[in-house]
Length: 282
Image (cartoon, rainbow, N blue to C red; front, side, top):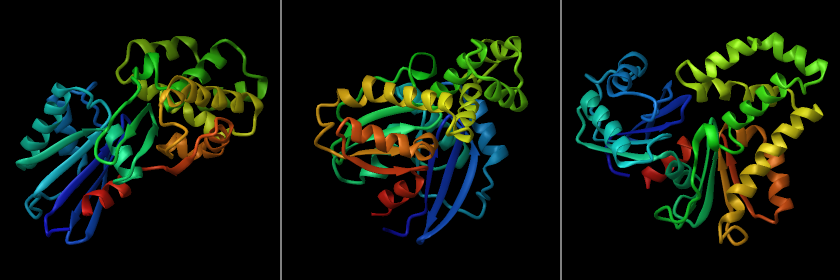
């Protein structure tokens, strides 16, 4: 590692983890999620200004590596890089997809299959240098299998269709605004419906053990394996790594499904940032 000062960011739709790396010292920071699919230039820069507690008068940053959800096209990549250059005044700015973050963090420089299970979900084959084959990620409306928005969607379906038993119905109504009008208003009229859906994933995580909750978790993760992972030609030859809060908290189900489908399980980590720091430190 040279004596460069590097700022690394790993952003989902809900939150962004930052690490300022300088002379082997690390400063960790947090902001809300920065997804260029949902945010405009002025909104992104406003998040930097209001939430990123970094004194730029005292810190000279040499380069920035930003990994994020929603960076899936050249225009979104350019938008993020433009905002970073405007705010930080740094010339060497690089932006990458969140799935490359998962791949570099877990595989480092080895071959493997990487999977994100956070607010959303995504998968790819990584050849040790770049992403090769990957299945299409269709977002929170049509996809995100196994991710927080998918779990949240199932929870709302169970509640609104009155499938929950009285125990879960009571717990749901104690924790959340439960009128169907309010739920549909948040989903179809208010901003960030993906974040709104993902908050209900926590209902699954804190009510583990109830058979209906286990059914939701297993069904959602099985959709991930069927629609994505089992389509990879290398699936039975290479380790499959998982990142994200959902993967971390449902790792027992992930492990069981890997055994069921005869897949070699690699690592399961909650946050990819530490792996990215290691990747950029070499």
